[in-house]
Length: 173
Ligand code: GTP
Ligand code: MG
Image 1 (spheres, rainbow, N blue to C red):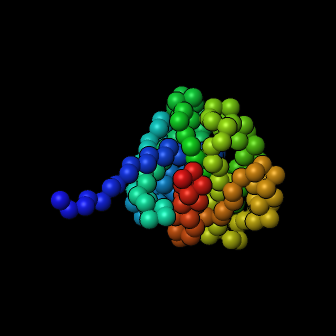
Image 2 (image 1 turned 120 degrees about the vertical axis):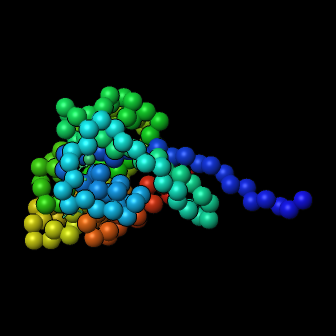
């Protein structure tokens, strides 16, 4: 009989975390559907998308979870983080306040998830060059101090979006 190709199903849960309007939902929309919404509304509750990826020639599936940055729209925290093996901790490079919140998000992540969840610090909206309030060096420094990976992305112009998700999945895998 013909040799059939074995397709192993790896399913990795990845969570998006960060203040409201940093671009979590648009990062997911760009990555999973190559779409961007200039006027997207706040997420209410939880949404997730499963995205096939190829890592080292093997097919893996990332199940990416997205919830609201605003407390009043958020789903039950423990359920959101349960089973997550990767996290994208997102801030907006054009709003310092969202960078200042990272410590709080990291705390929540570490409280509710496994100790070894692979975490990437993501400075989104790198296209907003003239409005930048957080330098690349500051992002790098924080990531280094906290033992996180670091990348700057733009969901608007697509730069580094796939790389951000691939970085986390590669490290898990
Ligand atoms: P919550 O669901 O409230 O937590 O927000 P969110 O983090 O999911 O933000 P969302 O993706 O809804 O984006 C908020 C706003 O920022 C929207 O108007 C987006 O169009 C805009 N936005 C998202 N990513 C980018 C980006 O990379 N560059 C620019 N210029 N705008 C972006
Ligand atoms: Mg959202």
